[in-house]
Length: 543
Image (tube, rainbow, N blue to C red; front, side):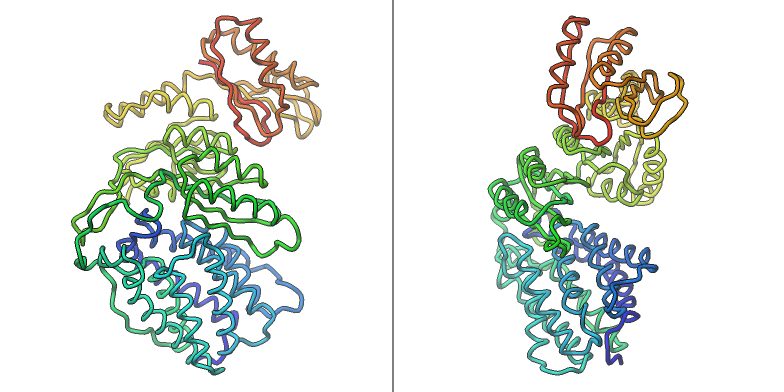
């Protein structure tokens, strides 16, 4: 048995906890009914803990903070990784539990029983603080029970405290149907709470060398019939919105209030660096108006890694009367950098992944759709290879994925415009690819260094006009370069021009370009949107 919880033991706990969550992933998924009606709590916890484990593995060379013991570095990496990779309500709350452990134990030279007790108390407080409207009978109750039992043990013996916390958590989990009527009607315990119990049992196994024997919780016959499939929690809201936000604490307080008026299941948590000014926050909310929620994020700071998932209507299933979401046959996953682009693609019914994703992030987005056939629109030549890897990884999971090789968001818009679920999937993919290919695309950006291009030599700061990825124009001013680029594109024909304005575009740019097009190309239809993409003040599509 271990007398102290050191860095090596924390490494082992992370590995054991992740392995245990994977073993119980399907079980936890089957338990989820409230307050997050997305049926994938087990998957969310696995992905969150996977991100924590990856951060720990990749941060092996992190020297830590001067004066802090080695275990502080491990906990800090785990907490940061969990925050950045948090998925769903339960994942966000788990990230805050890890953060609280890191804060409580960071300056403790040796972690024994009483130090762990204090850390569990702080974790419980952090879990409640992470949720806008805390509800008993959830993961929060399990965290509170674990902390309370650890305190009642009143000992510095680490194994005793760990066992007491895990046992109390398991007992509290069994009581959750008494606290939440939705759980009682469905004949299940709380899914997020079950995940926390799995992690506490893994801690006991690391500390004592023996894993506690626990029964699996599976949906049981309901205590009384489920009379309505949609009656509580987030079921009145159509979208789950999640993003990271760089902002200061006062702006985040205003954001909480705004999002609280727009939806529910609101969780806004930070990385612990609030006192230093701008810090990173994880935001999760269920809303109907995605655009308004993202705009609230823009007013607060810089949102990124924006993920929008649409909930389907729930219908009763045959397992204990539990409400589950019907699985859509088809879906689209779009890679887009920019809050405006995320809003546009979400309005088209697509699942949006922030720019430059990993194959794992794309695979997670593919799986989150719940569809058996998925089209991926990478919108960048470099992302196409990552998308193909994700498609290969999805095949053994029973998901057919086709990658339409879009090289720009304007091509993705053209592809989504011709989607037709009545067509065979293969034919639909071909039609989308043809529409994307027929859309000529162009970009305007600033040169970052001196280079020799097909249009001549450019210097840092020059305005570049690119057509189909090649530099065609080099200018000194933004607006003349944009108008010249439009003239060059339309010289080859075109009936519809799509303008996507970037984050750094001047406010008057759209109107100036519309005026130019109306004067020089009066028969062309023009659509302009605020894309919010970085680095490119203007993206153009011509069809």
